[in-house]
Length: 505
Image (cartoon, rainbow, N blue to C red):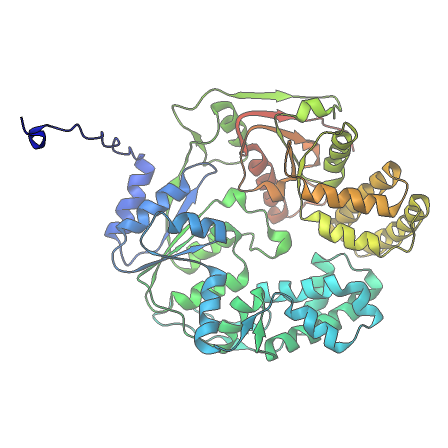
C-alpha cells in the first residue's frame, strides 16, 4: 500500500462557540444597522472583550477600536483585523501628520517650569501645578463645541483662554493645596497651561488629545468607531469623539455605568448617559457575569440591577468577619481591598511586621512620599507634631468652606501619616519602607478599590466596608459613585468574598 493512500487522522476542530442571546443581539445590530449608534451596558466579568472582538468582525466597512490603555489595545489587536489604537495613540498620529518635527516629552511641563526658575511656590507645589494643568486639559478648559443636536458634519471647536477662576475652583476641588495658597497655585497653573499649548516643538500625553482639537486637525475617517470603557471618559475625550463622529461615522460604545468611579480625577460621572442622549444611541445589555460565583453575583445585585450569574457558575461563598482581625494569615490567599488608605496601610504594616512579602497597588504612594518630604523634620515625634499643625490648619480651612470631600481626604492622609509615625522612628525609615512597598511583587495583593478596577482574584477580602458610602457623599452623583465603588470591589471576587470588620465611626 502506498503511504499516500493512508488516511491520516486530522486534529479535531474546536467546538463552535455558543453565544448568549445578549451577544447575538449585539452582533445582529452591528451587522444590520450600519447607520445607528449603539451603547452596550456590559457588567463586570461579562466577556466584554470577547464580545466586542467578535462584533468588530461583523461591522460593515472600515472600523477603528479605541482602547482605554495600551494593554487592552494590544490584546484586542491580537484578536481582530480592524485598526486598534488608544485615544492617545490616535492623538500622537495627528501630531506626526501635522507637526512631524515635534517630539513626545513626558517631562515637558517640568522643562517649562525649570526655565522659569525655581520660585518658592514652584518648589513647594510643583506636583500640584503640573496636575492642575493636566486636569484642565482633561476637562477641556478653553475648548467648546457649538450647541446643537446630531450633526452631519464635524463641529468647529472654538478656543479661548481659560479664566483664573476655573483653575481656582479646579484646585480647590481636586488638589490638596492649602487654602491661602490656592490663588498663587492657580496663577502659576494657568501660566504653565498657556505656555504648554504655545510651545509645540514638544508635546506630552495630555497635549496628544488637547492640541489636535484646539488646532482643528482632521481625524481619520472610519465607518464604525468602537470605544471601550466608555464610563470612564473625560470631557476632552467626549469632545474628541464628537468631532470624529461629525461626518456620519457610527459609534459603538462599551462600558458599565456601575463601574464609573473616577469622577475625582476628571472622568464624567454620567459619561454613558450623556453619550446615549447626545448621539441618539440604542442601548443593549451584556448582563451575564462569567467571572463571579452565584453568591458573589447576589451581593453585586444589591448595587446593580443589570448583573446576572451564569447558569454554570459555582455557588461560591460570602462570609463576614466582624472583629478587627488583621492577622497576615487571614490575607495569604486573598486580594485585600479598601476604600481608604489608612485602614489598608494598617493591614499592610501588620503584614510587614510578620516579615511576609506583599504587593501594594495604590496611586497614593508617590504623592504621599512627596508630601512627607516637605516637612522639615527627621525624628518621627517632631514629624508628627508638624503633621498635627498641618492637619489642624487645613481642616479649619476646609470646614469654613464646608468642603466635606476635602475633609475626608485630609483625614485619610493624616491617619496614614500618623500610622507610619507611630510605627517608625525616623522619616528616612518611613520613606524607605514606602519605597519597598511600592516595589513588592510577590505575596497577597493590597489595593485601594480604585486601583483594583480591572483586576480579579479567587478570594477577595473587603476591609472596612462601613467606609462606603463616604460620609461626605450627599448628592445623587456622589452616592452613585460610592455605590459603584462597592460594586467594583464585590465583582473582583471570582469565588469567595469576605466582608471585613465594620467599625463605628
